[in-house]
Image 1 (spheres, rainbow over the protein chains, first blue to last red):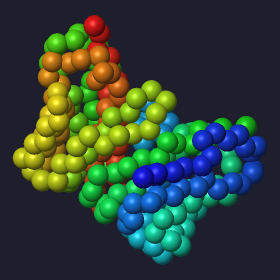
Image 2 (image 1 turned 180 degrees about the vertical axis):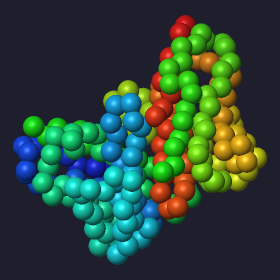
Image 3 (image 1 turned 90 degrees about the vertical axis):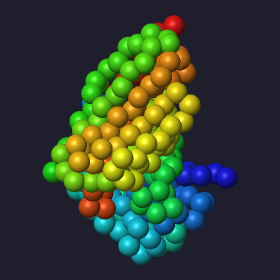
Length: 112
Length: 109
């Protein structure tokens, strides 16, 4: 099983550019989520989805959009990149919210 | 806003010793999770605790949850070098997950 696949692994953006971080899982999990990890702050939830067609905001949603058109895919869009969005981004999935979560390998994003 | 506090933030311990990492949280929840992260890597799920009094053990690690005290512990028994990593707890509240800042554990031979 591939598990949770994130692309790209590394990305450098200029301020104001937009981009999409891809996340796909092949475990038929209903719950998917995006986090950012900053030094000394642990992980913070950006957006989450409890199933196809349903998304909601997490703790730090500003500047990010998500959609969930299929069970497998949960892309994260940065609308207009800012230096404050420099971080490591993780996608995670679980069968349901209460279940064990599986994380992707992460995307290291730098905004200059 | 829910706060999740872990202590210690940094822990250096000798092989063979025992130690406990604490995770306190500020609001009612009966679901708590422990994860491990190796440097530069992703997170790996260790334990899922879904009720008051839940206790789970895997190898040299044992996790427990006291929802009345809003406290979870991760106990390490007879530490070995392979346990060196950062350990995170996360609390499930209101459809969202809140993570602690992590405990960086170094086991010294």
